[in-house]
Image (cartoon, rainbow, N blue to C red; front, side, top):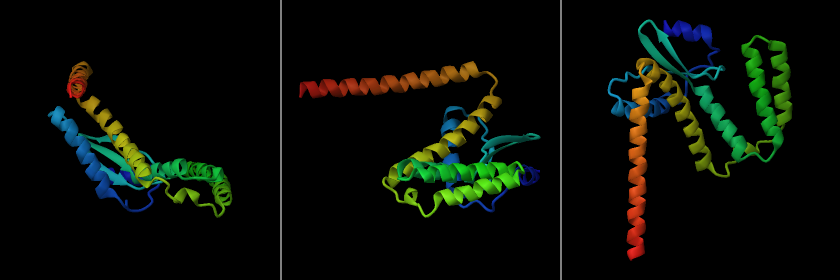
Amino acid sequence: MIKVYLENSRKLLGKPQNERLIAVKYSMICNIISNQFDWFASPELIVVRSQNRVCEILAINKDEYLIYDEYLSNSFDILNRLLYNSQNEYERYSYLKKITAEYLNLNRMDNLALVYAMSAKIELGNSRSYLNDRNEIRRMQISKIAEVFALSHELAHSFLKQNGDISKILEKIRHKALGLLNSKLSTRFIHQKQNAIN
């Protein structure tokens, strides 16, 4: 059933290339949630690669799935490359036109999509400064944070759906956050006192 949904709701681009890495991140997020809320049942992760760039929760009968689109990860990476590396504003325009062309193609506006795709190619020309990393570690960190955020955001939908009483959840989160904050402040205060004494 899920396969039929994916084939009919997305323009699939082949097999995902980093399915295992995404699954590891997803598992880590689910473990964090499950350690705090043992009743939480994490949805089954399905990783796809499609032109749609959509991450979503899908319920079919009693089964729940988190569908993560790996092409979204590619988009995060390229946007961060453009942000951190690009020395040519036309590279940014080119990518925006490429995204627009893909969106138009998804909506069956093929002639207009072709115009945008050609314009993106012309706009980019031979410029590839965005590929030369100035700070590769920073770019990769920000891209991974975006992936984790997308996964966590969708998990939050499932989490809230599974527990109708949000006030108890918020109170527990508030209590843990205040505990962590107090712990950090106490530790900092103790270190400051020790440094003042020494």
